[in-house]
Length: 266
Image (tube, helix red, strand yellow):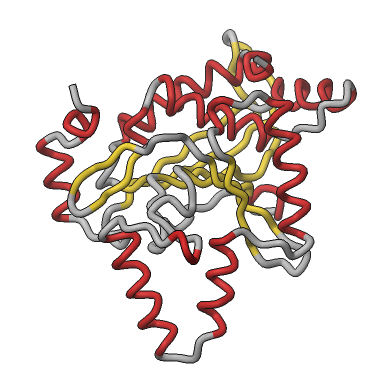
């Protein structure tokens, strides 16, 4: 059966019609993640030469979770229909030296292991922080240089062509997939405990996942109160393409990976 036919259920067709993007189509979710053992795993791997962080683990866990459990999260709306993406591409927020945010797009993230992701991100983040922008960020700089109100007119034209109509503009490096399948941002690294981000109106992201701050908290395990290191994790979904049930399926897979992070080395 055609995958796009399966994606376009009666409710999905209605949701894509009644909701605008992204002002009233958001679903918010929040949970706490026990990262005590994950931090120990990261520390051991770094000592052995594999320079990873929790962001690497979360990125691969999400990408594989989409692939195996929740392919509905790898979709976007094009001309009123839900369209499945050909590949799973993670977008990862990067804080530059001037405190501006940039992002790195990781192609075919679900096919990578931890070593491959670490090598890729090290090179791409270095280029981003050294001023070498990807096509999307370069387009942002061009847009910012335009005077008002031309800036607003050009942006609305771009959004209509690429986001609403789903037409790619390869000459200037913009398409319906310019920002990847989903975005991960670690606001805990800048001192924030939790937050609910915006679904970028200039993107076709189906969701944004936020890694928050980590704190020691008392947790009941096997009927005993123990101190664990807990992270607040939040997510914002585009309700036109997915429901909370899809996020739940992905999160169940992520919890399995968090208990067995060595699977990400494969």
